[in-house]
Structure formats: structure tokens, C-alpha cells
Image (cartoon, rainbow, N blue to C red; front, side, top):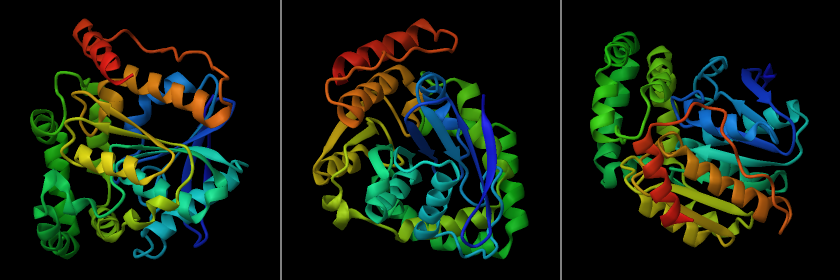
Length: 318
């Protein structure tokens, strides 16, 4: 059964969160502009023996718009995460972060190390992601212009985004450029575009500006929490070399490179991601040598060609 609540942040903003299952807590931290689509299979697989807590960033999903539009930086997001943990009576947890969520969980681990049992950064960067988007700095140069345009005409910007998302154009482009269209299911990916179409573009660009200026690269050596870095081999949003570097700089880190995976690897090859996550949790986080039951799926069988891709990936990466 899923339990939902609104958590009052330090500035009074209402932050939506939900929990399901029982057992050691796993907290899921999204990417910017997302409200949980990436966690579908992880939630289904691990909720039978973990408490799965998911929350929406301020201005995302069912969370409220911040009272002060400028309260969107990484320190504020970490304060919101702490408030969510307190509201759910969680002292320590394993934090999973996807895309921007990687920066959130790394910053949280540095700010509140005693509250983190383990870290799972997935397809994300330790800082300044626009500097490395598509492995060049073009996005960081264009973004200030885009931000200015959005803030000047937010209603027009929202209509443009809605047209692209609702028409299917954005999905068609993504599956031909940045996402492995041979592996991903449309029903798994389309919720991202539905949320993006409903989101306030001003919130998006203001938060992205803070994200683009934030980095913990120089402090990664301070993290001594068991860490499993996951990367998509063909990720264009956050190139895999960033994950290799993160793995190198965090002393107690392991690395999973998902073959043929992109920025949304957890819903492209979920079987591999789940198997590796289960191994990490059972062997590194809770008790060495104590084995939990292998994860089992409650979803319908995937197409044979997708099972084949997952099996080959497991052979390579395990």
C-alpha cells in the first residue's frame, strides 16, 4: 500500500512524498523535470523488502511552487530531503539519485554524512552538467540565452513545450537520438513528457541555472559511504567518463557500466540494474555475507529481444 503525505519544508513550501513497502529505506531522488518515471521497475522489484520513499522536488509533480522563486538551489533541495526523511521517521537510508538527483545525493552525503547508509548515483554528474552535455560545452553557452527567453515569455515557452510533448515530437526525437528506442517501452518513457508538459518552465530554468553552477568534484574524496555508480554506456546527457571519474574519486565506490544503456538505463535494461543493485545492498550496505533473496519482477515479461540484450549485458557487467 502506498502512503502519501505533504511535508512542510523550512520555508513553508509543501513537499510531496510517498512511501510503500516495509524494511530498510531506499529514497529515490529524481532528475530535473521528472516525477518518478525512472523508478518504475526498481519500485516494483524492491518494495517487497524495503521501504521505498519517493519525493517530488519543489515545483515538480505534486509538490508546491516555492514561496520564494529563487529558493531552488542545491542547499534548499538537501534541506527538503532532510525534511522528508524526518517526516517518515527515517534516521539513515540508502539514497538513489538519477541525473540531477546524483548531485542532490552527493551534496546530501557531504552535508549530512551520518544519515546516509549508501549511495547509488545513476546516469548523472557530480557537477556543472551543462559543461559536459553531449560531451561539449555548447549547452552552457546557449543556456543563458534560453533562460532569458523563457523568463521573458514563460507562457509562450510553456505552450511550445506542451506542443512538442503532446504531439509526440519530443518522444520521436529522443528515441532516435538520446534514448535506445530498441529497448525502451513507450509506456515507460512517455510519463516524462507528460510531466514536462505540465511543469512551470520558469521553475525548470531557474533550477537548471543553480544545477549548472553546482559541483562537488573537489570534495568527492571526502565521501566514505559505500557507493555504487551506475552509467549508461551510450549516455549523451552525462557521458560515461563522468561516472568513471566519480568512481575513481570516491574511495568506497563500485561501478556498473550498462552496455547499450543511455540516460534512462534503469527502464531500458531494468533486469541488470536490479540485479546489481540487489548485490550491492546485500553485500556492501547491510551486512557482509548476508544474502537477500534475488529480486523478482511483478511486471509482464519483456519482449525476447529485450531479454536477450539484458542477458548479454549481465554477462558483461556482472
